[in-house]
Length: 177
Image (cartoon, rainbow, N blue to C red; front, side, top):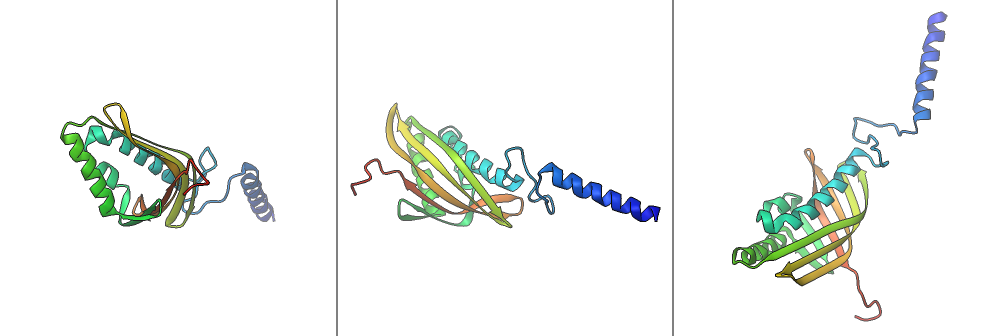
């Protein structure tokens, strides 16, 4: 009888402890909470978006296309302002920028993401965020894009890779086309 009472008391303490921590139950460590309330997987996706923005900013210095392309799955397809884009299009853009850099043009890139919100379900995840991308040369801004994106990730091994991205720039004149 004492053994049964001890087991019940132990079970009660475990249930009480779980209920009082405010933490969600996790399975396999995949959905453990981080300080900000996101799961580890959500935080990993958020970090991927920040790391990609930083890789874009550093591209004129690194001159390494793979530092950016490594974030994308081989079957990547995206939409940018209503136009389809593929991994080949991204490779071509980076190649064009690199060619200008190698010809001595003082190219600078500023890329940042803000207001990131992420979610994960199994081996799929997505993030929504606001972005700002500026391309400049010799102190003059050649291109500025600001807008919002939704990015879909697929987990391959230990890495979250971008499978699809849909970005739209903010229209400064909402009543004109």
